[in-house]
Image (cartoon, rainbow, N blue to C red; front, top):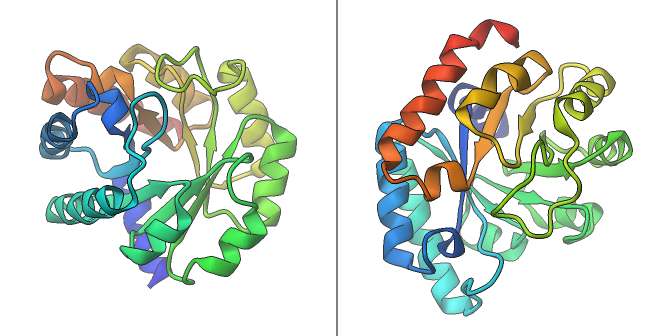
Length: 227
């Protein structure tokens, strides 16, 4: 089951949308509108990241959103991941969970999640990448690449050079680059080792969601020979 999910992830995740209500004017309905349009335009992997000012903390509401979001993602054959909230990911049977080095300890995550669940771990340097691999991450979220407007807790940008160093260290391990990425950055990031591109504000705050997604997809396909 997990191998099947990982195979689907490798096919679907070239554009990986990270989204939360705080990225969409603190409106759940606006979040679902943007998500629907992004999925229709070709986003194949979605991480629900409900963090930051005005984000939703009520457990019942979070569960309702997670169930609805999973159903919507699966309608479009997209992978659905939840950021940080491991217990919720398990409860709604998400496809996976993504955690950072300041979230739940990785050993505890491995104990809690079912074996078929995808585990993504953030890495901003080689040491964090080493730790993530030690604990059996299925992929690495590497960044921030550039200054991010969406993640106020993001560290100093590591840029393409930092990505390249991590790529050399981890070999062929799956990497998604994240942090302030725009369509014009895709070529450089693919050349330096990104398998996939994670996007928040360049899609969630775009005046035309579908066009924003299509711009990213165009640049990914244009540079598909770099990975």
